[in-house]
Image (cartoon, rainbow, N blue to C red; front, side, top):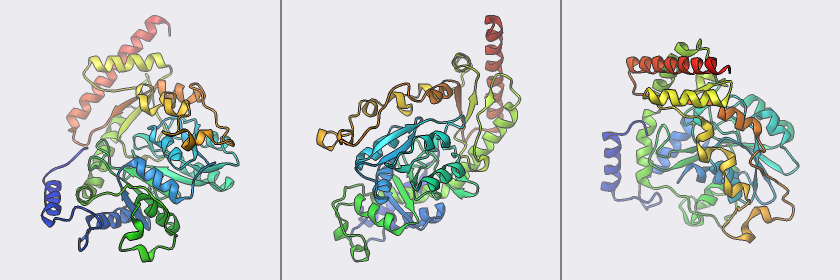
Amino acid sequence: MYAIGQEEIDAVARVIRFGKLFRHAPGADSESNQFELEWAQTIGVERALMVTSGTAALICGLAGMGVGPGDEVIVPAYTFMASAIAPLAVGAVPVIAEIDESLTLDPADAERKITPRTKAIMPVYMRGLPADLDAILEVARRHNVAVIEDACQAVGGSYKGKRLGSHGETGAFSFNYYKNISCGEGGAVVTDDETVYQRALIFHDGGAAFRSNAAEMKIPFFAGMNFRTNEILAAIMRVQLTRLDDILEALRAEKRFLVEELRDCAAFTLSPVRCVEGDCASSLALLFDSPKEAEAFVAALKELGVGAMSPINSGRHVYSNWSPILEKRGSHHERLNPYNYPDVKVEYAPDMCPRTLDILARTVDLSTSPTRSKDESAEVVKKVRQAAEKIGRVSAASGA
């Protein structure tokens, strides 16, 4: 969480003084309803639904789209495991596809992974980086499959002037503690499709049939879950939303500075960004010729007091570490496990996406900060150059 202060404290106090913490409390002037309206307007969509997490948003989005048993959902090999867990929660199975040097889903490999069972493609905007949405949407259109955007790490980002989350049939966001705006834990699903919205609404609230808006629903009520938010979290998010654009601009300003100062460094290339203007700029990705050089660079930076990491070491974000997925343990009970359906033929292996593993091992992420001064950013540049010079000398000495 980048910024939180007195305004959030005041918002929470307002809810507590009002005494209505449940979003459906009678007579309550719902903070949750207001945030949903404000979030929909921010993203540029008709409908938004606040839920308990980014994972819940993905699950509700897939349920809203009608994804279910026997279906396949294509997900990238570099993402938090929740992207792959979400299809399993609705009875579908994830199909894992390669990323490209932009650290986002490779449209060509996504297309290669499409089968008659494919129901949706899920581009994920890791580290706030937009994917190649023109190509992904064209692939989806050509094969008549839906797109659910996992924008959980890209809150407020955009692609060619249009907010991420508004390009596909649905978009999902996380307001987890580690996101650029946050209420500690929370999420939202967005859509322009009223049917998708109503299915997601029913699915996220097992008591939907008893709410005040029940008469407005056109979808027959079914047994849902409980991913409801509450008024305290919504009140925090309403304040956080007012901070979003300033945070993004500060992150983008520092990344522009880092890019300008480091673009000529011979030790690495700057990883491509599909839409520079819409990038959330949460980090600057550097691409090296070999994993050995990337590893040496991270070590050199650490000695200089600068934190950096290679995505290959991020553990839960690399598909080869998703043991529940690779071992096909898709539910707590065998009869609910989608992998046990007789017509499911999806197979996994730790080395099934070699290009992804290679790119991640050769990439180093430098985190940006919305609060660093220009002098502090310049000091980061200086130490990056020092680390680059050090690994250059080591490579030359070893004959690499």
